[in-house]
Amino acid sequence: MLKQIKDFGKRFIDYTIERDRRIYRLKHTPFCLRISLVNRFWKKYGALAVCPHKVVIDNYMGNGYGCNGKYVTKQLLESRENFDIVWVVKDKEAMHKSFPPGVRLVEYATKEALYEYATAAVWLCNYHLVKYLNQGLQKKEGQVYIQMWHGSFGIKKIENDCGMLTEMKSWNYLAQKNAAITDYWISNGSFETDVYRSAFWGAGEILEYGHPRNDIFFRGDTGNLCRDTKEALDLEAASRVVLYVPTFRERGVSSAAELPVGDLLAALRDKWGEDYRFVVRFHPRMVSGQRQSFLEKWQGFPVTDATSYPDIQELLLCADLVITDYSSCIFDFMLTGRPGFLFVPDRDSYREERGFYYPPEEAPFPVAETKEALLEQIKCFDIDRYQKSVAAFLERKGSKEDGHASERVARLVQEICGKLKED
Image (cartoon, rainbow, N blue to C red; front, side):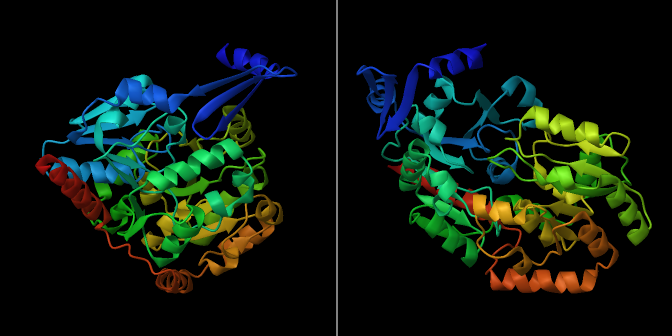
């Protein structure tokens, strides 16, 4: 009903963001309403003190306990210091069981969430705070914003480097504002540092700590975690898993339409002599109807939809093989040394839509533009050659991944909070 009301309103009202004001214009009339949300923020939250022990964390617009914030949270809890750790989530009733004791939850994009941001010493995020800046959020003196981006050594261009995104003027202004108020950017190496400087309008202070979420791949005691993850997905503990992660398209299409699931599973069985389960992780922004159409198309095959699973790193940890088109998750997965493949049937159109930092062939993964090529590459895959390519790629990109990134970020948070307490 709310969406219908909004769609009806768009027929009569133009809405834009100009600087720090929402502008509502009645179409075909001179009527114009300007609302300063910044002034409203200062009136309501300006006098509230910053809590020196409070840390507020958001994983990709409220998507739950995952990505970099999860592993920093674990470090902060292990420190046994008296942190007030607040996670912003889209459905706290549904998600509360996935969070450990010692973490508070608030609903994403609510007044309660804005209050937590207004009073936290540290903001830890992996995406822009555009939603909150559009509600008037301002960073106060003493607050520190740490950006732990959700990408990696990825191929596809992002943010300021992507013309498709910068054409959206209201988003562009708020994204630039977000970059301007960010104090620290957490990078995983020299390549990503260069991307940050270009994509985030110069960025600020960049710390090459590695990505906390990738520490999981350097642990030796992950057997129980893999078992629990497979159990949560109703997979047998001994199941061989091929994880498929198609990325998001602004124009609504997906390479998933071209993936030959049945032939793929047969090719994997022929290559490695075992049956595989097909686990798919759709992008959270893909509409549910499109996801359902793919799942219906794949009925009859051993397919599991893991889109709602909160932590993709745990899925990567359990995967024996990963296939994607342009998702940067495969650049995390390569740290395991296990096989990865790029299936890019729409490479030319995606390059025009989004743009690449480098050709897919410069990555260590076999690249296929047709289903026939993908099946042939699986048949001819050479694990030794692949692992050598991964090692060379990581060296070229100046990787700093070593399994201790979450410790470094947690130490930074502790230092920030400790200094604020002293002051």
